[in-house]
Image (cartoon, rainbow, N blue to C red):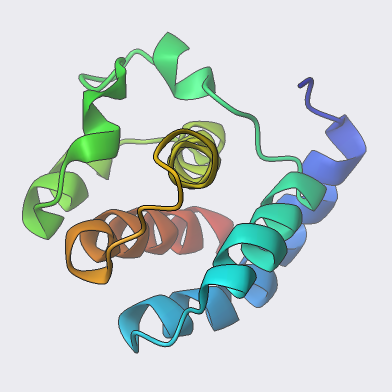
Length: 127
């Protein structure tokens, strides 16, 4: 999947507006499976988020281990210097992993810290 520069620009400009309802669903434990699998994923793709580009990152998590971290404080610390394209790549890569490789094994308690920390970082970078 290549990143469309136009969708990237439009996505970044509208990131907070698009991700805010999903963020609230994550923290309120009201994300249903269809919304997560279809709507959330479709919106990430429409905004131009690119799979796997965090693997090329210069940051300490330049491997897939970060996708499995469940400690919110550790994630926040690791994401502190993350740029926008890396953060969005982490988000869509985690979504893809859950929806395509782990047979929709989304678990609120286990996965919430990741989604919360990454989306918060994306919000910071979108201001």
